[in-house]
Length: 122
Image: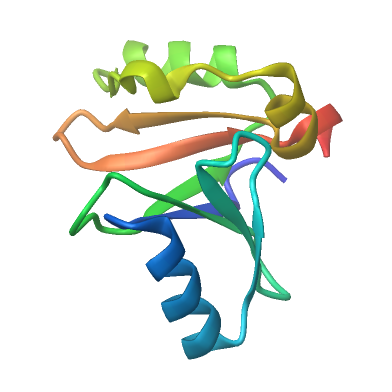
């Protein structure tokens, strides 16, 4: 269903330390991602991810959409924007097949949120 929370992302300075901390705190299973720069998080509920190089970050919440390109266009039409993800914005075919596509956005007041198109319409 479009609009439901479908994914969350935790940013930390050191992903290995984050894996140990959150895995121990919540008994989560954290598996290395396809690029080796982070982890996918198995919570038993909403899936998540953990990435490094983002010390002190607030958690990112991603909402499900059926068509990411159309949703990003709608965000812009409503006065929001797409955040510049720099080099991490690239989505390789393996990641897209495994996790789907995502975009980090800001609403028309500057608040951050994410959009997530699950793999294969998942």
